[in-house]
Every structure is written in C-alpha cells, then in structure tokens.
Length: 252
Image (tube, rainbow, N blue to C red; front, top):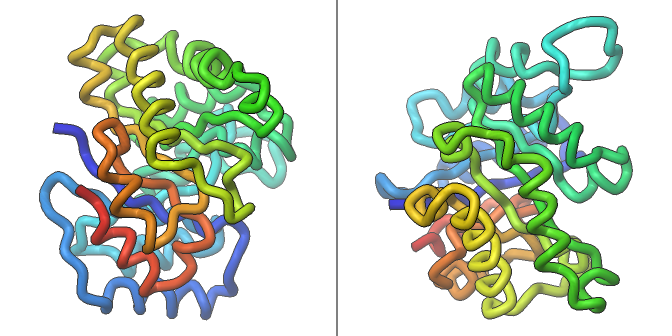
C-alpha cells in the first residue's frame, strides 16, 4: 500500500526562532498519523539539525530543499548528499519548479542529483509540473511525462520505488489558484500510467505521487481523496501550525 505523505516545504522563510516555534507548535497540536502515513518537513539548510533533533523519537522525516550533483569538492555554497546523510536528514526535495526556473536546473542535472541522493540513502521527493502556457496549449501530459523519463527512467525498478514524486502545476503555486481535484487526479493517473508503461503496473502502483499547488486545510481532504493522489507537497499553508495539522489530518 502506498504511503500517504504530507510534506511541508518552508522554502526560504522564517528566522531560526520562528522555525523552532513552528515545529514546536505543530508537534504539540493534537494529530494522528497511522502506519501508512508520513509527515516530512523540508526546511532551510540552517535549520536542518535543529529540526532533526526536535523530531527525534517521532515518525516524522526531515528533508533538505536541494543538494548538489557531486560528493564533495570546490563548489562553494553547495551542500552534498553526504553532508545531509551525516546529520540525519532522510529526504531531499529535487527539481522544484523554483529550482528549475530560477536556477536553470535541467532534467539531466536532476538525474545526477537523484543518483547521488539515492547513493547516500536519501529519499528524493522529485518534483515535476507544467507552466500555464503549457497547460493552455494542452501539452501538459507530454511535457510532464518527459520530465519523469529524462530524470528517472535510467533507474532500476528497485531504485525507482525509493522515490516520492510530487506533481506541481506551476500555475497553481503561490497564486491562490488550485487545480481542481479532478485535474489533479487526471495528471496523477497519467503519471502513474507513464511509470507503468516503463516499469509495470505493480511498480507504478507502489509509488507515492503528491500534489503540490496551493494545498490548504480546507481543500486537502478532497484533493487527497482522489485515487491517485497520495498527499501533498505544501508551501505557504505549512508555515501555519493549525493549517498544516489540518492538512495532515486530511490524508487518507
């Protein structure tokens, strides 16, 4: 049975003190997580060790928001998968639309990042998604399917099943627009079909595919209720404790 995942992406927000308060507020707000559900916090690099310590003894995971393609070397300002592993981080967000757009991350670069993350035992949360112009042209299925093919299809079936995929319609990130639950299901079903065509239905049915695009407490349960939507990668709403707890409680 696929894991149902509520992943918080704090992006470049909060001071250290605010981050500490937020993680305290979330963990102290009553919520239940069953064996088939997972909560992950993708926090800014300076807060990783603090959040790892805060969440010790819980079932929640901690993710970095990026890593570099190389193990080590003269790459000032970058962070390696080995560094993340060494401080107890278990997950890493790769290919977020903001990384693709602002930092020109290509599908090939992301393939390299996926490889090195897996080699250090990190679980990639691999992001894919289309801009508004692509959606309006009706070519979103081909575009997003190609992102998977170019970054993931070199992997063995065993390695592919170590990855969480997050579909993010770029036109619905931070805009207040949300894909309808039907639109989310349509794309998630398409992505699962792309995976099945390459790796078989059994493998595809074992991979969690999250939705990321203006998920809120008020719409989480409806979106997550779709058969191929396995939770969410949540931005702004994850910065509010009550809101994110409501999203966690919306997992199926």
